[in-house]
Structure formats: structure tokens, C-alpha cells
Image (cartoon, rainbow, N blue to C red; front, side):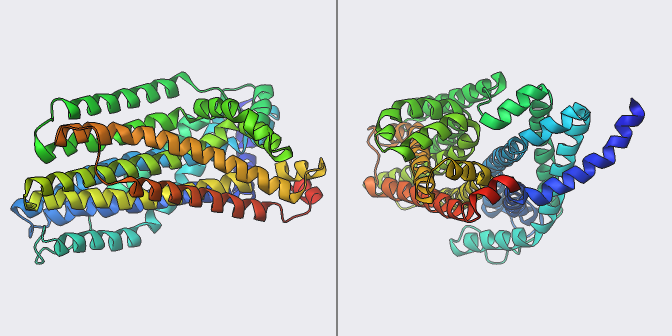
Length: 463
């Protein structure tokens, strides 16, 4: 038996290489998440290298360390979440392949090593390639601090040893850990259950995921309460707790995305059916593909929740400063810079993550689209179905993100002004929502058009 297992190992390596070539879209999604994550991590970690180089002292050193720990710390959390999400999507797209390997004798341990080995290899390559852009982004961050007067122009940029060690180490560790979790979930299911799950993709949420969502939401609520009570009347210090509340809430709601999608689909079933064939197909796909649809809702939730929350937090802070007739101190300028850097980082990272995930998820539906066309659906109806799905996912993601943003906006407004009404007007919110909708709709439509280009018979036969 042991001899058979060892003999089967080279075959698994060949299958892994074939899968990498055949499902390049899914692996590219994971690679980009790791590459961008490593770039962000190393860019902010290089502020620690710069602070330790010797030229930065006093307030300048504190600013660099704060930039690295606060922004880099939350960036780390988002990166790990993104890597886990894309790796999970990649493995789920290979559910039938995993089931067939089990049926011909592959052990759970062999499949697990194959999945982890693929993820580890992609992580190392992604982190190494991220070094040059991380250095450029790091220099840009230092230039921003020079331009705002928070760090003297004489403080030079330094990269290493902290930045590359953190970038390589954390990217590799997060990818390996995510692959282990995903592999364990994929390999412990029986063959028949694996085939059914691969076909429907309606895997029930695990208890650990539910607990994680509950903890994240509880932490966000706790931070919101602390902001509105303990931090009330303490000026801009309330930003320290308020700014973290919407991140925790957004992560918690993102973890609950499969449940929320099922609930929203049931709620919208009647109006969607009124749209005819496209509506029926959209309802069917949303119900059968909740796990993959949830991977698309996640970046929309993070994008909306953290973007809206941080922007309105800064609007309220600026209005409070103006009302008091106070000039911004160096520390307050540093905080404002941090907030806008957070927004910029989140907007860029989650936008790319959204596009990345949508392209990978849609490209893998060629066979599904081909089957729908063979069953009588026209290309226009298939595209219309994708458009409706995108609309529903955008509504769900924006709604979850809006709820998450309130964990920051309302408590901070109470703490800073005594009123729950934030400053900034509706324009900021509408701009964030419009950008989320455009990114989701345009990407899904473009990826779907590309997926239906082959003839329906060829698409089904090739998958």
C-alpha cells in the first residue's frame, strides 16, 4: 500500500501542473492577491527599516513607526483574508477533480500536500517579484510624509532587513495556512459528497466560520460602544477605536456572505422572476453557487464598509476642528495622512481583488454557460443573467458595507460632536457605491462576454 502511495505521488505532481495550466485564471487570482499583499506589507514594513536607519528621531520616528504598525497591521489582516478567499475559490473550482483523484486512490494526505505545495510555490514567487514594486511604493510613502512635513527631508529611505523578511515570511505563512485550511475541508469529504458539492457549490458554513464572524462583529460592536462612551469628549483620540470598528464589522459580515446571499435571493425571488428567463437563471445560479458568489461579495463589502467609514470619519474630524477654530497639529496631520493612505490602500487593493475574483469566477463558468446555451438560452440571456447576478451581489455587498461603516460613523460623530449625524453629505457615499457598482458590473460583463465566445458545444467539451 505504501509503495502504491509513493508511486502515485509523481502522478499527482503531473496532475497539479496540468491543473495549473488548465485553470490558470484561478491560480492567477491567488498569485495577484499574494503579489499585491506582499507589496503592501513590504512597503509599510520598510517604514520600520527607515525609522531604524538612524536619521529619524523624535516625532519623525514615531510617525514612521505608526505608519508601519497601524496601516501595515490592518493591511496584513486584509491581505490574509484576500489570500484565503482566492485560494478557497481556486480549490472549490477543482472540487470534481479532487473527487476523481480520491476515487482512483489518492489519499487525503497526498491531496493536501499537493494543494499546500501549489500555494507555497505561488507564494514564494509572488513575494520575490513584489520586492521591486514594494520599494517604489515605500519611497512614495516616505515622499508623502516629506511633503506634509511630518518627516524631515533629510531622512533617507531604507529597505531591509525587516521589510523583505516580513513580506516573504507573512505571505508564505498566510498562503500555507490558508491552503491547509482549504485542503482539510476539501479532502475530508467523501467522494460522492465532493462530486455533489462541486456541482452545486452550496457547502454549508462551518462552525469555525460562524464563530469567526461572531467574534469579528462582537469586536466591532465593542469598539463602537467604547468610541461613543469612553472616548466621548477626547477629541481626535476617538479615531483610534472608531477607525478599527468598521474593519472588524466588514470582515464579520463578509464571513457571513453565503447566508446573507441565500436570504437576499429569497427576498428578491419574486421581482427577479418577473424578468423572465434571465431572472429564473439568476435565481438558480445564486442559490446553487452561494460559496463562489460569496467570494465576490467579500471585496465589495470591504471596499464599501472601510472606504465609506474612513472617509466620513475624516469629514467629521475636519468639521469638528473647523467648528472649534483650531489649526491642525503635526500629530493631527499625521492622522489625516494615515486615514487617506488607508483609504487609498483599501480602494486599490479591494478594487483589484474584486476584479481579480470576478474574472477568475466567471472564466470558470464556460461549461455552465455552454450548457445553458445548449438548453436554449441565447447569448443575450446568458449575459443578462450575469448582469442580474452582479446587480444582486452589488446590492448585498453595498448593504453589508454600509452597515459595517455605521460601526465607525455614528459612534465617532457622537464622540466628537455629541450628535449621531456625520458630516460630509451624501456625495461621498454615492461616489463609493457608484464605483463599486461600476467595477462589479463592468468586470462581470466583460468576463462573461469572453467566456461565451467559444461555441456552446466546444465550451462544454473542453471543460
